[in-house]
Length: 96
Ligand SMILES: [Zn+2]
Image 1 (cartoon, helix red, strand yellow):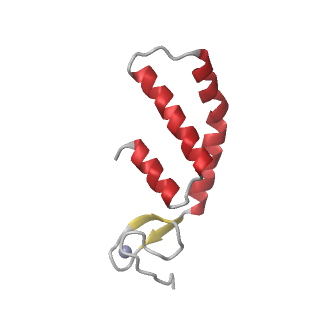
Image 2 (spheres, protein in one colour; image 1 turned 30 degrees about the horizontal axis):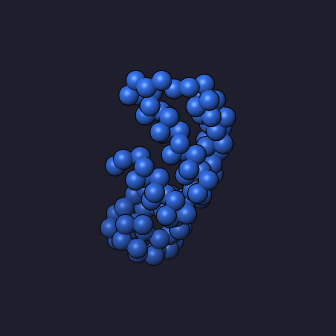
């Protein structure tokens, strides 16, 4: 799945905010310039350096908002926005 699509989903599900989404988009655009051999100015490089720690802390916060879940119905194993709610099938279950 493309990174921009993942960002869109995380933003839509309110896992990350609009500011963080925008910062990551801009960093990805700058990285793409480098990947494609375009000249990346100091202004862009400084932007990436300045936003790096903010993006990392926002992503850590986002991960902390998610709950690790195992769905007894569809056997999904992974993260969910809501505790005990399966993000795949929507089944709500109790841990006990
Ligand atoms: Zn499920």
